[in-house]
Length: 195
Image (tube, rainbow, N blue to C red; front, side):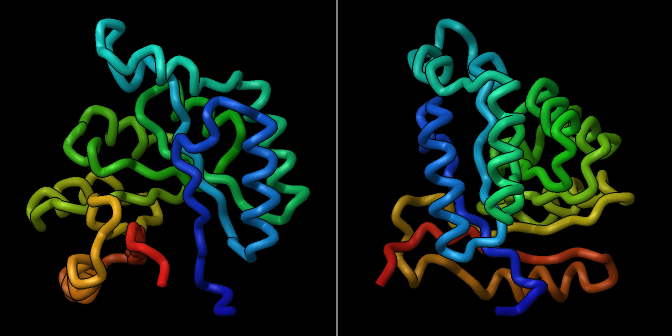
């Protein structure tokens, strides 16, 4: 396997707020030869207001900070890096406290410039920017906020499942041409049905 290739096992919110399930996902991802595992770090108050119909669901997905620390240790023992999707200051601060070297900005936050600026001055070294569905002008504005970070632009159509002919993988080549003067890597978030 290419040592520069980072295969991320995407757990998102599939852990259901259960630390035991998280441990199983970490072990399974490691056994499947993924190099990283990514969880959406959920704090209900970062994702919604209390009157939102899914607020209680988001609240049920929360895991205590001390348990995330345990899961970071489990990841290290399983020789797999742990990443977070961060959605606000609280999740960003936990990522820093756990000394994660990589976080992902979900596409829904690509125009949340006040939050992007906080991430840009954080201790996190590597930032994955989800750019699915955005025009180049918006992506460029976000990229410009991270002059001191190692960036990865993650393309991926946000439909579930995505038909192969709708993945538009040619956009990665387009990004490579547009950002060739910058130290940016490129990736793909695959939401297609395995064949």
